[in-house]
Image: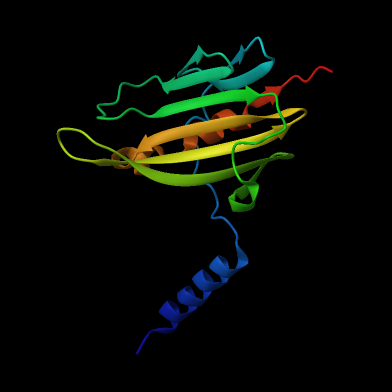
Length: 168
């Protein structure tokens, strides 16, 4: 016979799943750090932790954590601005997350990267944010072996501090 606690817990989980809610986000490991501001010529501005190393790309930035992690596959992150109306992700299949008064639409996918030691699962979070005349695309790839420690906190940290100066 199941205990009352186990039954109550099961009911709560079922209600949570039926409601379509997302679990509360884990504390972001970059949040307490002091921040620096970087600006791209396309008017994308990021306020990010001092420990992050942004490298400018054609449409935005590639960002790496400062710490040297002994990883077979690195944590990869990019943010880019696209100035067309077509978004890369099918919005009907995305989950919504509010950051302040902004809405970020995202999806998670798993893929495999092979090598001499066998395959490793790479978790990818792809997110998009609508801006006037386009969108900002965020993407983070994290090896499954590092996922518990690093989840997608880098993407959410960067998205939280991202702004775009729209000029008509």
